Image (cartoon, rainbow, N blue to C red; front, side):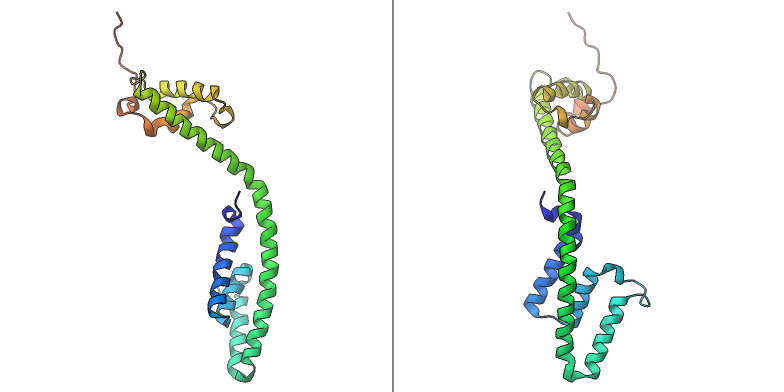
Length: 190
C-alpha cells in the first residue's frame, strides 16, 4: 500500500508537503509559521478564540515584532527554528503512524484488489454468456453460472458467500430483458 493512501498522510503529509513547498518558494513569515503550527498542533487550535493557544502565541509574536522592530527578524528566525523542531517531531510521529497504517491496511488493500479483479472477471463471463447461447437467462440464473465459473477459475477467496450477492456484480452488463423482475415465462418444449 502506498503511504499516500494512508489516513495520516492524507490528513498531515499532503498539507505539510504543500506548506513546506510554499515556504521554500516564498520564505517564512509569521503567518505561514502559524499555519504550520495549526497543522502540527491541531489540539492547540480551537474555534473559540479564548482557547486558541496557537493564535494567542502568534499574536504575541506579532505584537513583540511591532513593538521592537530592531529584533523582529531575530524573533522570526527563532520562531522558525522552534517550528522546525515541532515539524520534525510531528513528522516522526506521522511516519510511525503511517507505517502502522500500512501494516494494518495493506492486507485489506490486497483483498480489495483481488475482489475487484473477481468482479471484473464476473462481468466478463456474464457478458460472454449473454452474448452467446445463454442470452435468455435472467440475472439470478446467470449469477449461479458465473459463481461456479469463478470458483473453478480459483477466485474462491474473493467470492461472496453465495450467488445472490454476485447478482449485483453482473447487473451492469446484464441485458434489459435479464433485469426484469419476476419469474421467466414458461416456454413450451416439444
